[in-house]
Amino acid sequence: MAPPVIIKRASSNGRLMAKPNKAEYFDTTLSTFRIDRFFVGQYTPNNYSLPFKKRLDPQFDLCKVDAEIDLDSENREFLEKPLILSFDVLLNYLIDQRRDTGKSLRQIVHGAHIVCRRGILNKFVNAPYKKMIEFKFAVKCYQGIFFVKELSTESFIRGNTKHDPDSCFYFNNFKKQVLCPYGDDKYEAPPSHVVSTWEQMQGVYFCELESSHKKLKLFYGSEIDAFDKCNKVVEIKLQNGEIVTALANQTKAEKMAEKLRKWYFQTYLVGGDTIVAGCRQENVVYKVNRIDKDLLPAIVGSEHTWDDNVSFSAIWKILTSACHFYQNNVAAKGTLIVESRAFDQCIKYEIRHDGVDNILPSHFKDAFEEKVTLIDKNAVDKDTFKNGHVLQTENGWFDRRIGETLE
Image (cartoon, rainbow, N blue to C red; front, side, top):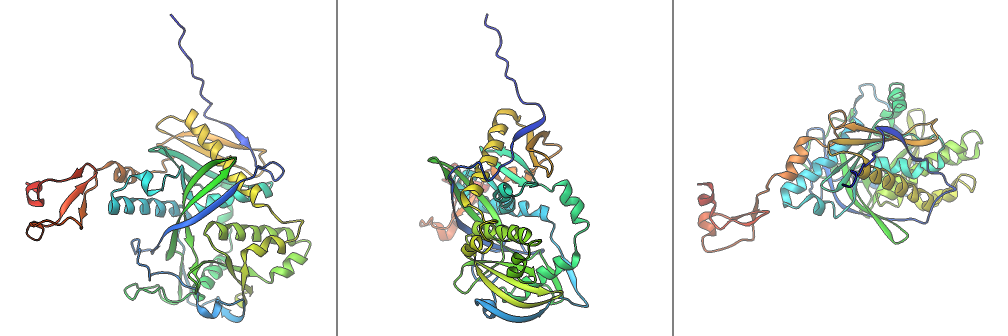
């Protein structure tokens, strides 16, 4: 009798891979396009109406505008949406599509291998250029698709308790003041003295990473700051002082270049070409510049510039390493946690039980495991007006009328 085959799995924690660096990369291209967009507010369900969008005020839709925008307010009120809810917005979108179309999860995500948010992708693309890069994410495979959710690092949690509330308020107040009304008369926007990050445009994107004739397909969500007069996505940013002045200062140049690199990839990943950047001194914006994204690598100079191939290959390496490890080592009721810490030389992993870290709530799974009933509005027969529309399920058409089915 042959001896039993022993399958050795990895321990519950350890080293996953080396951190990406700019000297080790392979040619990788990234193409992305927007599939859908919708509006969501604190008390507003997902609204897919085309006119309902955030649009850049025409007076700021210019190359350069002198301005005087006061970002402070005596009666100011700031309603800040927790970052951890961003992933839930994407899951809710998938549930909406399931109930509205009856399509399978794989169909809704256009055959993507991975579902995530832009935020974690932006961490990956910057990783090769930042020695002390920090990020943390969870991986869960469901119906053959890997869901990747960004988690807060310990240093972020510590730093977030010390962040400057004025800076965060000023930035979001600036975004509010350079936009037009949202285009829906029924929507009640927050009062003028209230700045809220709950009112968001969300975009849904399909992306293909290609390297050595292999493709990695991603489906991700992202907040959209605004659309310009040509209906193109623009990123809105706020900078303390002049960009050129900061780049000319030896003590500030590296930090400014890092910020511009983030702006570049954030804009790239939402399919935008333009950044609308306000320059402020204390609480007043005195100038608004419209910056071409593709000029940013040249603006920072050769010492601080970057290569798209390096950044895109980092996405490929990190995601494929995590997913391959998950397939070979994580049990059905397990979740993989991946973390890069500032002072570590490598990216580490930890396998946890779903009871500890569950990134896919039960109502999400229920939506994709229950039978969906749709009304077929195109089904017409001689009894339609008498008995109503024919119902459709995943298993085909009901042969009986609605009344007969209910009986």
